[in-house]
Every structure is written in C-alpha cells, then in structure tokens.
Image (cartoon, rainbow over all chains, first blue to last red; front, side, top):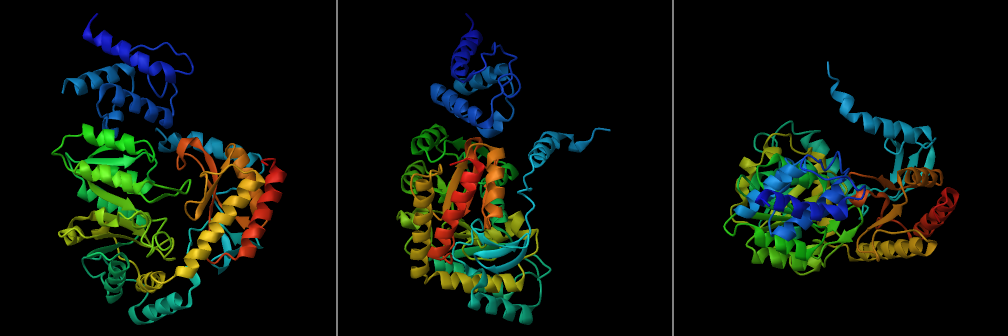
Length: 81
Length: 399
C-alpha cells in the first residue's frame, strides 16, 4: 500500500460518518456537489480532520479544496511540514 | 453573453415560491411613521417594535435630539470629507472623547458604520503571514474584514474554548495572531465565555478583539459589555462597537489602549476612503454615550423585560435559542422558513414587528424570529407582546 492510498483510506474513514447519502467515495468525489455537504457539515468534518492529524486547515486553504483528492494532497503536505 | 445574474436564480426562485404561498414579503417592510423607540405605524397599523436593537431607547431621548439639532444648525448637514482630510469636526473629537471616557481607554476611533469598524480594523491589523482565529458564528462584517485582508483565517466551533485552545497551539509560536470574539452573538442572543477564551488566547501570545455591538450600554457594571461583566476588559486589546444599537444613531468605533493605536487613522482604508459621519449624528452619539454611563434603572428594567419575555415565550411552548435570557435578544426557533415567514406575517397582522432571520445569516440553517427588547418597553407592552405571540402561534400551528 502506498502512502497516498493509506492517506485516502484514512480520510475515507473520516468522511463515512458524514456520508449520509452513502455516496461511493473516490479521489474525484466533490464535497459540495457529490456529497452535498452544507457549510455546517463542512465545518464539523474539517474539525474532525484537524483533530485527527493535529493540523490546521485554514479557511483560505479550504476554499481551494473541492474534492477528496485535493484533500489528500493538502493533508499530506500539512502533516509532512 | 453569460448573464451575471444567473448565480442568483436559486434565491430568486426560493423567494418567488415563498411569496406564492401568499405571505407578505418579510424583507421589504416600510415604517410609515415612527412614534417612539417601541411603536411605529406599518401598513397603516400601530405596531409594537420588537426587532430594532434599540436596546436603551435613546432614539427619541430629548437631550440626544437637542444635541443633534444644535449641531445641524451650527455645523451643517454633512462633512463632505474623509476623517483624515476635511471631515473631522469638533463633534467627531467630542464623540471620541465620550467613548474614551465610557470605556476608560486611551484611544477611540469613530467609523462611519459598525460594519466598517470591523472591516477596517481586522483587515488592517492582521496582514500576510498573520493568523486570525475566529468563532465560526461570527458576524458578516468580521468575515468580510478577514476576506479583505491577507491573513490566514482559522475558524473554531461556536463558543468552544477547547476547540480554540487546540487551534492556537497548532499555530507557529512566532506568528502574529488575532483572536476575534463577540460578547453577545446576535442570532441566538447567547453570551461568549470570554474569560476562558481570553485566558487561552493570551497564553498563546495572541492579541484579542471583541465585538461588543450587542452588549454596550447594559451589560457590565458600566455598560462596557460582556468583557467587563466577566472581569477581563483589561485583557482585551481592541473593543469594536456600534452606535446603531444602544447608542441609537449610526456609526462604529474601536477603542484600545495600544500605544501605537493612532497610526490606524492613516493606514485603515475603510476609515480613510469614505466620508465621515454628519455633524448631527456625532453630536447625538456623544450625548447618548454620556447618558448611557448613568443608566442603572433603565438597565435593570431592560433585563426584567428580557427575562419576562423569555419565560413567557417558553411557558407558551415556543422553542428558544438560549436556555435562559442571556442578553436583550430572545431568538424564537421556527420549524422552517415557510412556517417562519407565516408566523412573522401573523405577528405583523397582530401589530407586532420582529426580525425574521434565515440562512446564511443564522447558524445551523435555522430560521429564527429574533426579538430584541428595549428599556422603553413597558411591562404592559411585554404582556401584550406575549398575548400576540400566543394568538399568532396558534393561528399558524406552531404551538
């Protein structure tokens, strides 16, 4: 298993409790479009990811993250720092 | 050609759908006459005002009106200029002096609106490489101030001290940090645990800005707000406030003890690149601020009104935003936007005006009927308000 697929699996695990519609999650899944998350759900999810990885995902960075693959990239970069 | 307005289609459809159900448009109300801080004429009908933020009822105060009339006569209708050019009159200095005295602080800066005060101070003091840490339920003017500046924005869960502390600890220790809090959050009328939040913020080396828009004049021993009430005003670096609530006029301000604060007058764009407040407005504001320093009885009556309304609405079976009356705002939670709009219209039919608040202004997608009390509401008016809520609530089927 590559580091990237490990990260993807971990983030999928965090997405699952918020995936109320049971959408199949892949790197191209978008948060607003496919998962249909509102701003409140986004906030709760971001807090989960931040606490799980002990990182900060600023609102500036959140604005650039639209799909799961971009989140994998962002969290990988933030945890490497 | 792409129609730039197509992005508003969903909102236009929602609004048309709502109006098609037969309810009056809640966002285009006109007050034909204003009789007092608590009564106006709407649609030809005498209406009790319960959604104005006119907490201390200063809009019709004799001394306030007299000060405004005199300034209008002596200084004219407007300044036609920026505060840093031709727009600072004697009245602006007197208004800032009144604020310094009111808060017991060294510096005061008056802006043309409260919105501009947040916009200007936040966007100017937190720059590139700095961090702003804010409550997720912050007011639009705070978010817009963040958006206008170049700092990194970090949000934490509403009123959650632990979430704030965790995030502060994850930030680089040497980076500039500004924690932005509000004393009273205006949607639900709940109060922030400022004492704990300020303690963890100071420990992390952050500067602290508190917006006390909805607490000035009646919370705290001298009406300085929630930070004073909780004994931590000395630890607040910047207090932001407004004249459009308890003061009863329009305008905004920032007070601070920071030794370099005066430089803000030259670098803060929403202060520099706009015309200053008209002479009558600053004269009314200064007179009002000075009167608010000595208003113990009115404050006590406002609190009595707030507690009575909260208890009365709860006893009637309405769902409220806070378990007890924490401020002069009582938020009644509606099941959805349609029912909320129906209830709002039914109240207006019964001669009662409240604010209808809906997403994105509200937290958690809620529709709220927001009631704000005034020290000039009589006990009889509060009883009257409750019976109108009961009639409207039963007619709409909410209680």
